[in-house]
Image 1: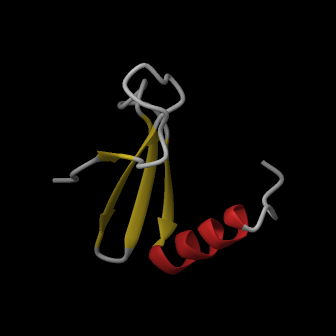
Image 2 (image 1 turned 60 degrees about the horizontal axis):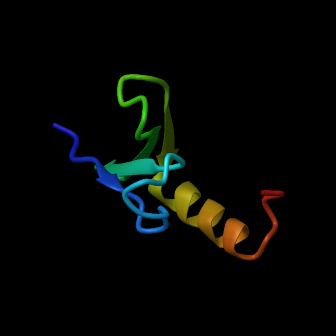
Image 3 (image 1 turned 120 degrees about the vertical axis):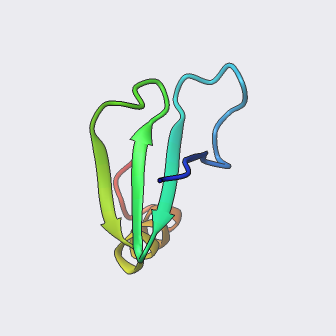
Length: 62
């Protein structure tokens, strides 16, 4: 069973731009909270940590 949690960076209860995260056995999954049965991204934990570092530095083009 995967336990999903909303990202701590969501804008609050009315924010429609929310993602949910789950982690297990060295993997991190990401999904759109509005479409829980839709597509999911899957990352190795170390890769996801590296992605977060790049996003925080502004290197991800977001």
